[in-house]
Length: 248
Image 1 (cartoon, rainbow, N blue to C red):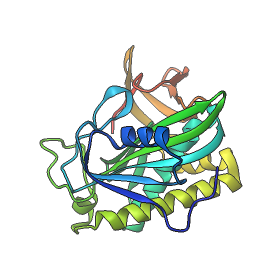
Image 2 (image 1 turned 90 degrees about the vertical axis):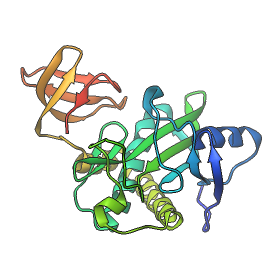
Image 3 (image 1 turned 30 degrees about the vertical axis):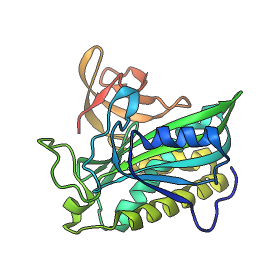
C-alpha cells in the first residue's frame, strides 16, 4: 500500500448515482491519489451488500467512498472490511457514543441501532488486490428514519448537530491510523480487535438460517470472511453473506 498524502484529496459532489460508481469510473480515467475521498450530498442509487440499497436524506449524512491503492493478496479482502468498521467505531467512540458494536458483515451499530454501513469493491490484478473502493454511509444529522426502529444517527445519540465535512476528515484520519496499525501488527491483531467489537461474539444469541431459527454463539471469522457460529447442538457452521440473520 502506497503512503497517504499529508493533506487528503476530497472531491465534493452535489448529487451522484453512487459514490462507489463515481470512484470506479475515476480509476479508469486517471491516476488517483491514494486515499482520495469522494463525497456527495445526495446519492440516487446508493448500494448495499448483494444488491440492497442505502437510503439517506440529502445533505444530512456522510456518504463517501475512499479510494485505496493496494497490493494485497485477494484472501485478505475481509481485513479491509474489519479495518473500516473499526475506524468508524473509533470515530463514534471519540464523539462520546459508548455502546458501539460491529454487526457482521458490514454494519456498525450504536446502542443497538444501525448507524453506519460499509460496501467494499475491489479491482484485481491476478491474485492481488490492485485497488479498493471503501463505500461508507454514516448517519450523521438525520433524525427521521421513516418508521424504521432499527436506525439511529450521531445527532440522535448525542443531541447535537454535526459538520459532516469535519466528520469526514476525522473518518479519514481514523482509517489511515487503522491501516497503519494493520501494516505493523498484521492479520492476527486486526481479528482480535474486531472480535472485541463484534456483536454476539462468544455470546448465546438468536439467529435464523435456511433451516429456521436457532440459538448459537459466534466463534470467529474464517479466512474467507465467513461468520462462524457454533449452534446449540454443537455443530459449527460458516456462513456467507445473507445466509444467516442475527437478531439484535
